Image 1 (cartoon, rainbow, N blue to C red):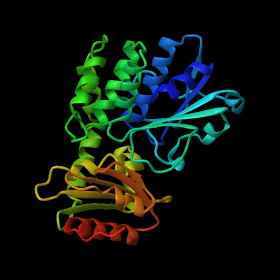
Image 2: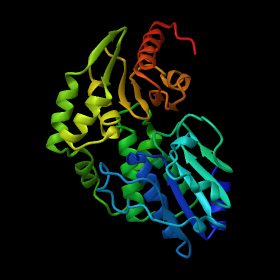
Image 3: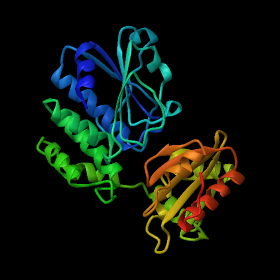
Image 4: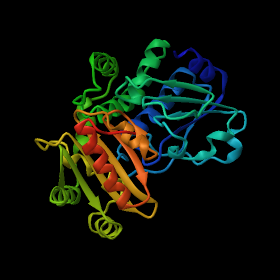
Length: 319
C-alpha cells in the first residue's frame, strides 16, 4: 500500500510536511520522524516542517516549524500527517503544492490529498510510518527512530490501549535498535510541572457522574481564562490534557471533557469499552473508535452529547 507514497517522495525535490493543529506526540513524532527519514535516505531533497507551535512537546528534538513563503510550494510535494479532516490541518497552504500525500491512522472522514495512505488498525501515525519505512527498505537513523517511538508511546498510552498489538511491539522493537534511550523519552513525556499537578487535582474535583457508566467535566469560558492564567496553560492543555483524569474510575466506561472557548465547546470523548466515534461524527468531529473529538456550538449541545453516550451504553443510540 506504500508504493505510490514512496514514488511521490522519490519524485519531488522539495517536500513540505504538515500535521494537525495543537500537535500531540504522534503528530510531532510523525512529522519530525518522516523528515529525518527522508533526509537520511534522500539527502539531496529539501524538507520542511510547518505548523503551529507547541509547549507540551517542545522537548522533542527538531520540533521547531520552518517559516517558508508561499512560493516554496510551487512544484513541491505536501505531505499531511495524522489528520482526518481538512479543518484540522495546521497551515492550509498544503493546497498550493503540486501534489499532496497523506499518512493517517484515524477512521476515514473525508478526501484530503491526491494520494492517501490510511489504516486505522495502527495505534499511531508513527507506527504507520515505521511500517512504511521497513516495507520500503528505508534506513532509520537515531532522530527518526526516537521521534517515531515517541509518537507510538503517546498514542498507545505507553502501550496500554487496546490499539496496541503484536505488530506495535514488533515495530517498537525495530525502532529501539537505533542508538537512543527509551527511558529519556519516558522521562520527558511523563514529567510534570507542579502547576499541572495542581491543575489535575483541581479537575478531579470537577468530575460529574451522569449515570449509565458516563462521566463528564465542564469548563466554562470564564473558568478557562482563570485556569490558563493561574496554571500557565491553554485551552488545549485543559481540553486534551485533563480528559485523562476520568480514565480510571471504576464503573465509568466512557467520559467526555467539555471546554467552552470563543471557537465553541471543545469535546474530547474517550471510552474503555464502546465505539464513541459515531457520536463524535454526529457532532461534526471524528477520530478513533475509543478516542474522538468534536467542537459544538454551546454547552446545551454538549449535554446532548452526554445523553447520546448514555444511550450508547444502553444500546439505544441512533446516529
